[in-house]
Length: 67
Image (tube, rainbow, N blue to C red; front, side):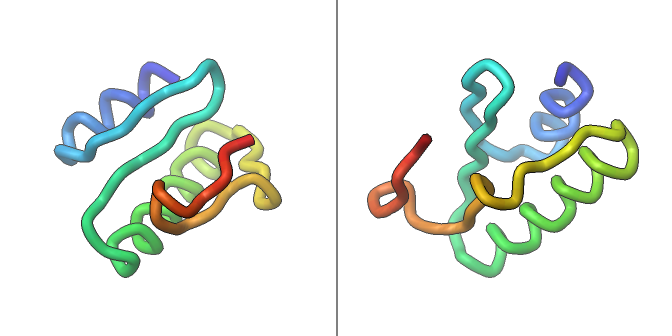
């Protein structure tokens, strides 16, 4: 996950990590969907990690339920 942290910091994104989970905060839904796509691609294709699509979501941190 250290590589992921370096990438997020390099892009200037705000994020919080909880063990093997990560919340990434952006200003708009459009940006969130773009970041979700590029993050999923990076994790699955480059690092060969599995992203749980059932737990992955885009939305307001005030309205989402975290698992």
